[in-house]
Each structure stands twice: as C-alpha cells, then as structure tokens.
Length: 371
Image (cartoon, rainbow, N blue to C red; front, side, top):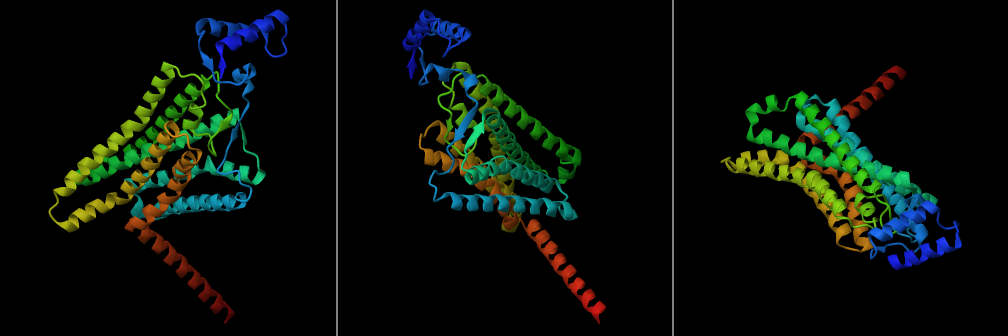
C-alpha cells in the first residue's frame, strides 16, 4: 500500500531534482491534484509507476494448477470436456432441425440454448487449453476485456433463454388452449432477439464500469479466464458510484430473471396441483423437469461464483466454482435434456435407426452388384 504522504514525498523529490525518468510532468500534476482532493487516501500499489493504467498492457491468468505434472492430464481432461460439450449440443441442434415433430417453441428455445452453450464454453476453454500447451498464461488488456465481454454476453444470453423457456412452460401448462396463439413464431423469434440485445447491453455496461478503472491492485487474475467478478475485484478504488452501478446491473440482469422464473413455476405448480389424476400431474410436470434441472444447475453455480468471489479469498474454491459455471454446466445441459426428454430420445433413436437402415441398404446394394 502506498500512502498519500509517501506520494507527496516522492513528488516533491521529483520537482526538486527536475527528473522525468520515472514520472512525466503531467503525471506529477495529476498526482498532486489527487493528493489535494484525497490527502489521507491509501493507494493499493507497491510503487508509483504501477498507478498509471497505461502501464497495464496485459494480465496473468493463474490457471487451474501450476503443477507441471498435472498439465498433460488437465489438457486431456478439458479438451475432452470441450469436445463432449460441442458434440452434445450440436446433436440437439441437428435433432431439432431434422425432426419436424420438434418444430415447436420449446425446442426452438432449446436449440438456441444449445448454440449459446457452445459459444459460452468456446470463449474460455480453447484459450485455457492453449495456455496449458504453450505454458504461457498471459492475456493482453484488450484480449481480457474481449473475453470478459463474451463471457457476459453468452452467460446473460443463457440466463435470458432460461427465463423465456420458463415463460413458455407457464403458457403451455396454465393456458394450453391459447398456447399456439400466444407462442407464435413471431413472438418466439422476438424473444430470442430481445434476449440477445439485453445480453449485449449487460456486456456494455460492465465494459463501461471496467474502463473507468484508473488503478489496479495487481495484474494477476485468480482464474483461468477473465471473469467479470475477478476483473471488478482488481479495482483499487471503492467508490460509491461504482458500487451502486454494479449492484444495479447485477440486480436488473440477475434478480429479475430469477423472479420471473420463480413466479412462472409458482403458477405452474399451482396449476399442476389442481389436476386430480396422478398420471396427469406427472405428464404435466415431466415437460418441465429438464428445464427445472438446468435452471437449478445454472443458477446454483452462477450464485456460487458470485458469492465465492465476493466473500471467500480461497483460490481453490473460486476456481472450482468457475469451472462448474463455465465448463461443467454447458457440458451437462445436453445430457439433461436428452436423458429426461422422451421426444429428444425418440428422435435420436430414429436418427440412429435410420443410419443403420441406410448402411444395411448400402451393403445389400453392393452385394447385389457383385453378384
């Protein structure tokens, strides 16, 4: 920590000697003004040269582990998880496109959620795998802001899509007769576009907050990627305006979607309990089971990341929460929907059976030609 008295002594020495080796004249004037406004402020920097934002050209990602013996294992593990995530979500997208029975609002939103999961995990894991392979965990200042923006865009996009899917289930169960009219193709496309633009707005608001940072505590990021929570914690200043804006942004883009989901499921559960037969209740709730599982997984890990970064200083706990949120959740989503959804299972079976029949026909044709 550098106190204002230390800065004052340093500036006076610079003025007496006329040296410009460490500080330019404009920088001396800036620091002098800061001392006049906040004479008792402590600055979180080990030297005066670290106070200038223009000197921060790159950040250092700490990664999962620095143990050299674990690097090959981590490389194979996260490469496997990335491939599983991409292939699993692509299968769901192709199944929705190919099967006309899945051309419904619920599966339209599901295909967009799968595409978002692919983009979400692609913003972090390829960079991490490259860092493990090259033993270089440096990321530029611009690259860090870009990665943070993409993480926010696709993370918020998934948040918005889960909210839209909760509304879709609410209309399907509580207003089944009006469902085709309410959830028309135009409204579905508008909801997806609105989710994207809201995600872009969230990303830009976070960028505006970060771009206002003038001082950084350090250049080391306690994660394998530029997470928004980690970047916000690097700021030295603790201004009231920054706190209010951050809480407002988190409240709007975090609390409101959760509230809509909770209200939707309150209405859904109330409608299901009015059904007299157990079979009818099970059939109605089974259409929400996959979505509810994904919601619990997504928000559970997201809240865990937020709380760990705000409260806990444990590097391993923060890392575990980040891995669950950015990697494990997108990987498990296709398994949850494929294992708990009969329509997806039947479509995949028909696709597999169709490929087998095509292969048998090709073999029979080849045999007949030879004969």
